[in-house]
Length: 83
Ligand SMILES: [Zn+2]
Image 1 (cartoon, helix red, strand yellow):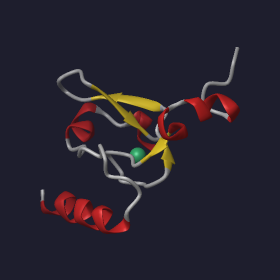
Image 2 (cartoon, rainbow, N blue to C red; image 1 turned 135 degrees about the vertical axis):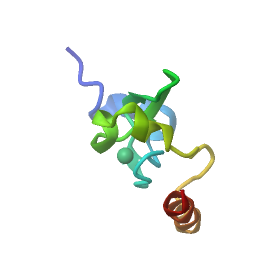
Image 3 (cartoon, helix red, strand yellow; image 1 turned 120 degrees about the horizontal axis):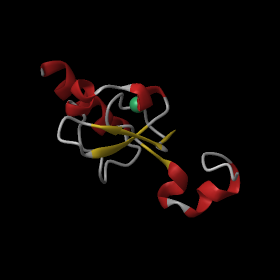
Image 4 (cartoon, rainbow, N blue to C red; image 1 turned 180 degrees about the vertical axis):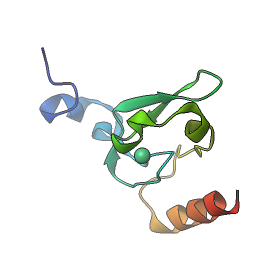
């Protein structure tokens, strides 16, 4: 079986399989795992969050077009703590 989470295969995926995790807000992390929220929507999350339950996945924020910029990450963290 091919390794889908390692090596050259990742280079063909968008951003080489990396991005900002919508749950823990880790930047430049591999987003190769999926978690479902309470609506059954699948989210791309990091390995740490792959076991997150639906309640946690509901708090996920959109990281589309977020990039790897630290300033946005700070804003996201503030939004997260204000909830
Ligand atoms: Zn995560």
